[in-house]
Image 1 (spheres, rainbow, N blue to C red):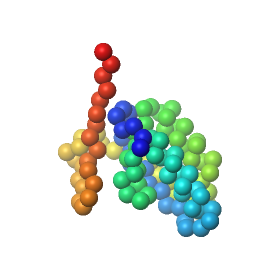
Image 2: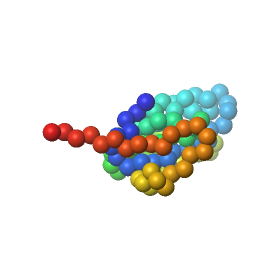
Image 3: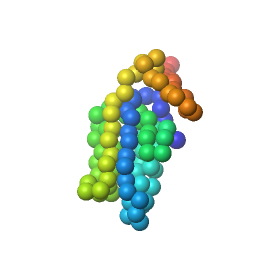
Image 4: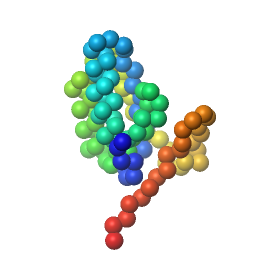
Length: 102
């Protein structure tokens, strides 16, 4: 599971068709997104991106294998106030842990 302690919070969602090629692309995207955050539903991740450079790198890496004609991958910035988040059913609200170096 990726680190969720620093950076801006994003919600990432993807829709990739079920096919031989689609299954391969889905696995690659799953592995890539797992480096940046955690899976909260089958095709949805909560990500922490430290800066704009990390966001660009993620998008560039994903574009190398996603099919722009068949696949959809979206990222949305999320409000940092956990009081504004709502979960119905299983799951937990992401808690933000800050790391301090002394």
